[in-house]
Image (cartoon, rainbow, N blue to C red; front, side):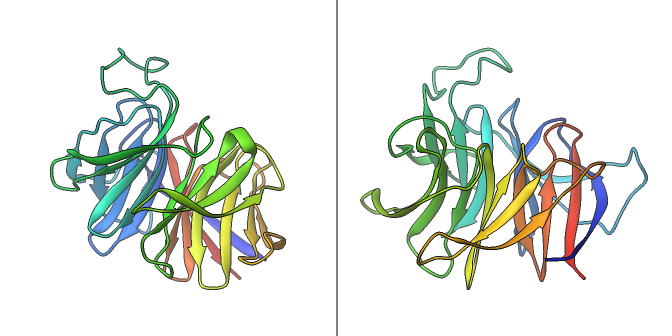
Length: 233
């Protein structure tokens, strides 16, 4: 896919590692404090501009590395303990976990272990298959679809590269970010085979979190703090 990549604005946090577009605006998760902010999506600002925060909530997540929205809740991917970044908390995960949280208060509504253990860097609520989530399951180098009500595995696909991050479900496939390789691959939902790709070369922001934004994508860079727009041309 041929794309145009444009820096829009810097996130309200220094290490944004998950984002999700909703009707209310853009939710962004911070990997250090594990707080989540709702902000407006701006066309662009200057090099040092940061969009104002409309709402901010805490969470019991830790080392947060993925964010989704669905069924009235926010979903956070906790990539293990938070002590790498901050003082440890009793609520920190010891391995990868998924948390369902209240978007008003940040209160934990439920939490589950990542299937098979290990870490996770991406999560997506499947709007085409209600009641399921997609997770990057890093220990097995797969992306896994789970059914929320009993946390059973629906399907899993091997990933073509390591260091999988953001995930976006579209009608005809599943986009998965591979941060180290600076590539976003589209996988077939039946076979898991790659059917399209987007290259994100330097000097563009390194892709981490990924969210659908109309016919485009938004991605966040946990290194530079930039949020960029990826549009097909």
